[in-house]
Image (cartoon, rainbow, N blue to C red; front, side):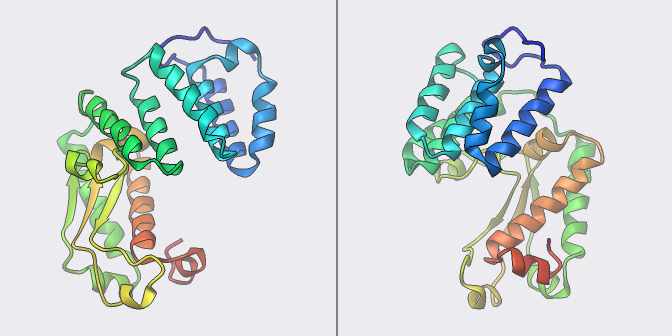
Length: 242
């Protein structure tokens, strides 16, 4: 595998390196020690690339070595203080480490930097997201269609500053607003969210503007339904929401 010269910002990596990174993240989910061993087998020049250093920080987080992961991400911010991706990963790490106030500072910086980027959501894409949202709710099992029948379905650009200040992920793709009922299915059966919101910029950034965009909307809606109503994997499968 050929090494790529490291830069302070995201380099244009060859497809094979993006595939290597994706495989490394997948391995980190399943077997962090094996992911670390795989990382260490890469050439030194490759290991020092920004994207691979971020992957190593993720492996360290999966091993609950929060201090090492934080140090690594902060060193990347010394090189590139306005790197929104690193700010976001650091916010996520600090949140997992039980430091919500520190996490929120980096989430707010992520939102600020993301909001300064050129908008991705054209009127056509906003319309596609809105139609896909309505279709995803319309295709739910009848039990859930009834509970969501009068809930406003909204598409917004990004989460608000106030929402992120409350600890919300600035790159979340959707929100079921209201008191969720995780672990309390009896209460969940009698209530509905106050609104359902999808965040267009985050969806497009994740899925692009091709057919995958509608697919990502469906996945997001099903995920948020599961979270809001406190469903586990068995519940999701039983109700046809997997």
